[in-house]
Image (cartoon, rainbow, N blue to C red; front, side, top):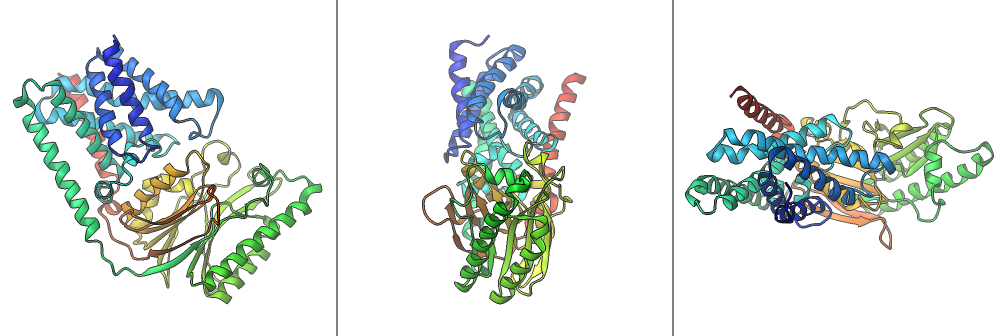
Length: 488
């Protein structure tokens, strides 16, 4: 039964966990998860799981509004599913906990949390959205765990701390019963923070830096909703010439801006996702113009492009084209992961391979926006010893801050500098330790151009070699614990 006292733990705890993703306050998730766990362990297993699910449902219905790109009944169905996955670790904890004791008892919940979070990312289209690890942006020592175990290692530590705090709270009258679990957890967390701080402080200062400029589209060129209609290929024949004229002015804006930044010293100019729209029949002429700019200015152009095939069933090619100073197209990559919903219904899918090419700037890798929400996908950059990851993106107001912070973890996992050029969001750059090197917000007043020095020298990481091994070990661990319960 859910009484007022239990609800006083459950509701604030769930709210702290959920809204920690929107707020730059890393401790919220740690204490919030402990409160929810305490409430779950204070209720009967079956009815308690139902109460936890209902509270997650209510909190997420508020927190996810504007983040999930759907509305109406589909929105509430997806929120209900997400709430179920958020409830499952607590249910698994209640099932397996009675068969464990001591230090192993404190590890049941974190293993269950990581297993569910990881499998949700692998088995649904939501990628790693909702991972509690992302709430720790700004805690640079802790973020370094991603270089070894991915974000799953960070999620494990948060859940382990929550489980340990809950044990200490529950058995505070019998301190000797929890002394070992509390001591071990405190020592491990302290050691990890110390090691992370040392990793950041000892980061080599001699990495080759590249001056990068990230451009953005001009405000006011298109009417509201016009870019969407063009992207969908919904251009009436009578409007074709007028739209082509606007696109020509857009092309001039980016090519002229690239010349300007190259002459100011930029070695690499990056355009956001889908910012340069071009009809398929006009693409060869545009690419020839872009090649001339690259050759004349001796600059690398990384162009986020949307090629429109008007009238086709899938009218949209979402591409990253990289032209080197010799005028060669060394990368022509199509986005591999379409955002579920609108984009998935119009976009040609890519081949699922991260391009990595050797250049005079280093080994350059490329992906596009939602691609980088899949750590197992971007790990191809680290596996191929990339030095710099180029990431055109396209956000909207409700997700721009969170999505920007998420991509810092991709830089750490793969040990690469990362340049993110975002339409309708935050353009920025991270070094291989996830530190922000510079940023600019397209939705803020002023020029949206970003100028930044980005290190182009990869730092090899364990995660790029072993991948999601730690997460799979958590899956195996909780499966083994459940098997032992049912055998007993």
